[in-house]
Image (cartoon, rainbow, N blue to C red):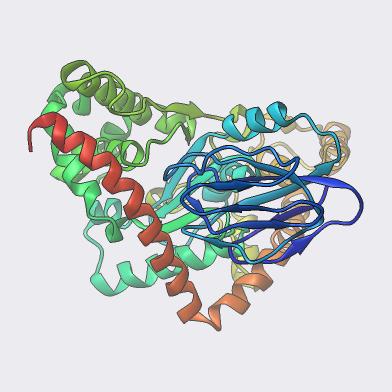
Length: 423
């Protein structure tokens, strides 16, 4: 079925159709359906002939407008995104409403602690970006979280911009989603403090990620210890239903759930939404060059947008066992094959697996096959990034627009929270 999106836009469909307009998290105002029948909305609805409608939705609630017609014109919306979907005539209106109401709010954040790598992409980004068509998605650049390592101010600013470029190049649609810098929504720090006052110290000290980072030589500062509380504030501030996380971060989300339940039990039922984790088991942990989880902290990453000899040399450094070239090899216990699976089709995976079993293929051949697959997989994204790099002002405008939309939702949450705790 044809699909249109946008605010203040014109769209059309040919033939007898029925139109459903829904606004998953925004208020609809001044819209008009033109065609065989007409429908207008402002503070209320004007219904003509056979059009079926509902009242104009309050802010952040779905709105449904049904009617026959072939074009949409003259629409102005308080916020975007607003989605228009054309269906064949005679569609089940109730089914459409259920479809829209089933959409969940999904939140994803990523630190600007360096150039994004394929562990970021396959660990969370790819799944999150795929949800843009189905869910109400929030993406933010977690520059407060990056402060735990006390980066140079210049580097933090540059990396924040680089993350914005990378997200947009990888397919983030700023019309369908809300994309912003964490630091542009100050309410997150207020909620973080309130949650800190509810959080037992032992809950943070037991977090595996904290102990793991200390074991790798990172300084034990308060920000590193309290990281899960700020993460909880990020999630709870926007009434998030689903949070894509890797296996290693599932415990942090359990902290979020624990704090939300504690808050609701103390101050009132359903004040904060208790989120659920979204994990794809096959790609939850992406191996790095040394076989550990791919992480900038371990200096074992492969950048998403690497090019030339420098990036190829990284592929050639991936750790493998010492099985001789002529012997069969175990694909299921090979870091090279684990990465290849992320980018290859099922048929391509099976072909390489058979070459592993047959013997006569060295790990160098497998690494070259992986490098070629990587270059092909990210080619279009690499080209989009180059174009965005030429328009830094547009990238900044996208972030500012996203922050303004995010703040509206954050303020609604904080009004509930502050009233509940007596502030």
